[in-house]
Image (cartoon, rainbow, N blue to C red):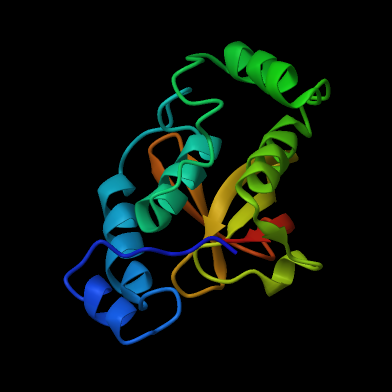
Length: 170
């Protein structure tokens, strides 16, 4: 499990009191602020695609960049998939490439995969099946929706609309 490190006034106070993993400021401040900042940001390969959106969200409340091996190295769909193949040694199948990239980032960051994706909790990294393709995202604030980025901003998808195929605890 990755340490969720809030950047707020209570972080030092919680640490001094011995509260494990600081406090819940990441879920009441950092994650909502991040989601609000991306609410209407359009999809853009290499800056605000589904994989970097999920990595940016995780970085917002952990200060860890799980996508550093990918960041700044592509700007097109073809470039993204070529980089996934190059970095992970997988991704020959475009249908599973995003899942391969998510797995690579999660394993490298030491995230533990949930035995069942339905166990995932707010802020966790997930791979979602949406319209016959896999996309990366995070579990939303209520724990009932997957959040990812779409053409004109955030997508909020229920499990029945877009099943979560894999999930890692952040």
